[in-house]
Length: 78
Image 1: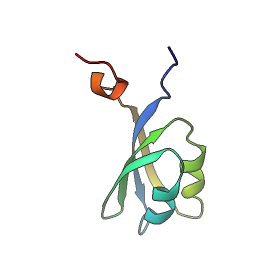
Image 2: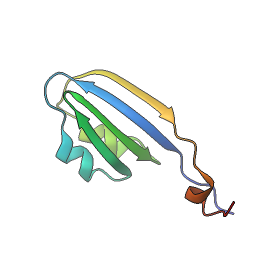
Image 3: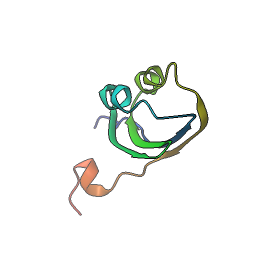
Image 4: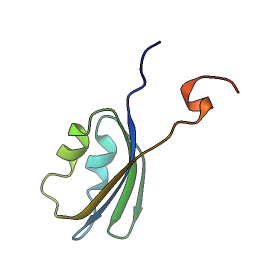
């Protein structure tokens, strides 16, 4: 069985408006949410496309935590 790529829940606080469009277009990024100067999303696999989307925008804080996959996310019935 192939190993699933890691999924991280990410929260980033910016100086000014988050780069929403760039982040939404980044490979492996989903579930993008904005609340003021905070952007939250999921990053699946490599962080590189996500980090490239942040280029040119000042980041105040970045927090990343592993997202535990539910059985239905893994394709296994309960």
